[in-house]
Image (tube, rainbow, N blue to C red; front, side, top):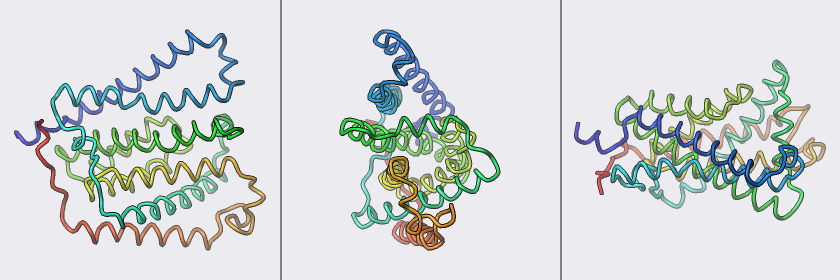
Length: 278
């Protein structure tokens, strides 16, 4: 029981994450109210919108950090900021590529049944790169910060608390469900949930968010590239008949499966959780 008390309780972790989102929304809305003359300016000023996205991603980690420091726990342990062997960095990227390709094809299959919502058009516009400034902000915010912050609070802070009080299967599933709900995109729910399962397994198996951050960042970078490239140029190379090429899809599946095997081969035993008290 004393060992469990060195980690956040799941209900506390959920509550802190909810507070962090409310905090970011309140601060963001306050900044808009103070410095933006009209809501229309956000839509017309792409740099401002991208800056708000970056701020929102980075701001999500503030409340969890304050909570962990208040509890006098280890940020490194609770957030799973542990290193992994260098060769697994490459396999993390391979897994990220695999889930990006598979996720893209899932998007295309789902769109045959459910029409894409108008919100996707707004997201695509927000991710449009039209200047060096856009490239820098989106790379920092939508790729790097999003991956590091979200993995720290979901696969680290939340999932590690679930693992201490639940079996690992439930911990990974619950953390992935929470991540899916947080995104608030029903259209992408299946893709986000399955991605969360893979990232959750990697974080649990290695007791590190490094592989999940790399996989997450690779997926986000692929989406960013995809939103900024002429789709017609992908025909015959990446796309085939409006879907991901079977060859590319096959490479993605093989990379995902073989990459996961590398992690299971390296981490033969369950992760060991150190004492988190400072």
